[in-house]
Length: 424
Ligand code: GLU
Image (cartoon, protein in one colour):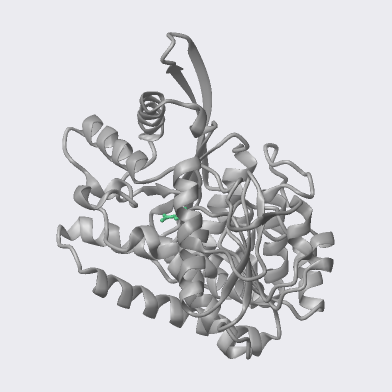
């Protein structure tokens, strides 16, 4: 196996986590395993320099990335992350997880991801817009509605997608809405897109809970991350009778045995830009979050959160991965030994990219669907996918993650095999 010079070998790096997940699926792939090396190499990675004139007249340079991990099944698809910890290794892993996710859901896409190493909250709105437009122009070489379609991720939103769509369109002399998804509704966005990821976490969580006899009503839930994904998933679980007993974000860890009122927390967060200081709960130490009594844990922030040590102390029955890559492979083993079920990211948070797919189809057809139609179609795709993954896990006697990887890798490698290697 050829080693990649630019991938960190640190055992905690996201790319290494991904490679270990691939190692685990290989023995289940039969003859297709012959092609698996392709998944250990991103197809294309672009690093761009983004010079930015700040409001005070100084010039700063930011590093941006777009990685297309695999395009065997269609154009690249995946979000754009603005975060100070973004680096090539992380974007490579995130792009690979998109390859697996799109294939697990049978969406006609490969996997891609982008990002800028920046704290978006430290920029003014004007600076953020100029940064986004220059980044879009730089990666304009490799994106496009038939090539690679970005979307929101951590630190980006509909407004950023509108600037990306406009910049790409300006550079091409015509409005091309299908170049990004997650846009505002009035600019070719799709109804239901914003809530789709959280909704998918809820649907997959309920399905796995039902199959394994875990009651949602009265369940105690601990949530990490109160952003777009976590807050929507939590709201749906609250509506279904669960209690959100803990919420953690970068600013604080909140705990309330009787349940945190999410409506009040949302108002508090909107006003103070963080959950810290919320009067409806008690603040506890950060590490205590992982030892709380809970039935369901929803990590919905960043990767690399559930370590072996944390997995050893967790007291839940079910982990729903709203985030991408929150669990280390060695923690996966501990959770499996302890009988804690994990609904893996590549299925659990796939509601977002599923409705992104609908958005892209609607943009292509210039014909838009109702929210009811979108939710119905999404519910069916997600429910069928999780059912298929659960059945496969029973058949192969493996974790839901490995079974999702089996389903996905069979599709990707069959496409790879039948397309063949050019030149032959
Ligand atoms: N960033 C989201 C994810 O990780 C959505 C990607 C998309 O809609 O293309 O799945």
